[in-house]
Image (cartoon, rainbow, N blue to C red; front, side):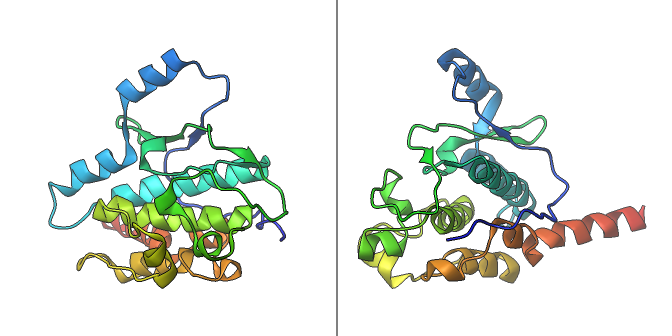
Length: 217
């Protein structure tokens, strides 16, 4: 399976950071003290609003997608992208992807072993016991986005993963629901590339909102 396109439209948000393998435990501890796990950040801001913080989620997701793409370009499959492994500096909103303990080299070959969190397993692994690295990363991003908003994992069993039934919060935007559905397509080849995710209308809405605010100033 071929790699993803190199072009990126992107969204103007703080830059991401990928933890180096030589980062010490003490340094990671200090980073955790300064930052928050992504789920904690989103939930903290959601409690103050009538609906989930879509702006905060865009910041988290945009940088996480960029970080995942960066890893794949370097030939690294993180294999465990979830809220616990995404830290946010609440002062700068910089996202840091950490914990590469489940990571391995990214290849175009079929994988037949899985180290990731069970709830993030894609249907191709559950049914056939094999998968490709890039599509499975996109699946993980879809699970992550839905989890950030709902606070719960969309699937808790192999049966639910195979069924693929998604439950969205009533006030979740149609654009966000569409992006989640695109990432969680059952057929791996039908899932979007990293660049298509970043150019999705849910991310582009942030650009449009920024333009409108600047024009009104």
